[in-house]
Amino acid sequence: MHVSALIKRPPKYESISVGILYILMNSIGIFTSSIIIAGILLEKSMRTSQCYRMMLCISVLGIIQQVIGLISGFLTIWPLENVYATKIAGALFEPMWMCMLYFIFLLSVNRLGIVSTSYVYKNWITSICNVLSLVSILLGLGFVIAFLTPNVTMRYDPYIYAWRYFHTTEAFIVAMFEACSLTPLSILSLVNYIGILIAIYRKVSSIHSGGAQIQLPL
Image (cartoon, rainbow, N blue to C red; front, side, top):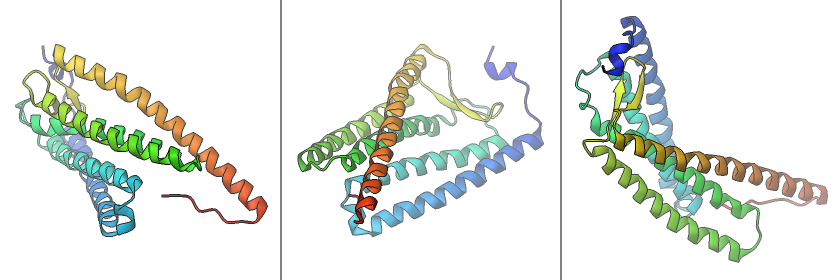
């Protein structure tokens, strides 16, 4: 028996309320992400900075997710019976999320350059981030292709207001790879940012005690 058949269908007023909330939240997200993207593209100093280029990639991936989230709001109010009707949207939703987390990790690695004053180290980080950015994009495209195959499907379930895997062996393997790769990267990103905050705090404290000014690199 299909999982949705075991779940009681929510009242219509609840579905409408959740759908409207999804539409409003993602509309605001699309608007703010568009401002960030426009700001980076219009400012030359930002376009030439690797840090801001990564932020641009994160914003673009985020806006794709928000568009799909907007679609989710309409699917909550007017659900589709065909489980494969939203296959393309599902094929973009999860891979974009995964690729975005890869770039968030890379951004944390890039920002480690703040900690060091060695130009060799900073150049090394820049080169590594360039290579890993390309790898992240290729991984994202690989997951899009995987989700477009017949045996791996991410569909929107209006009964639980969430996107979920259509259970197959292949989908389980993809889900496990996602969990095993994103969980450690998320933890490492957190550790990196905590280290960066501590380093900035120490620099600011030492410079304030000396009466000088600090300028952090982009």
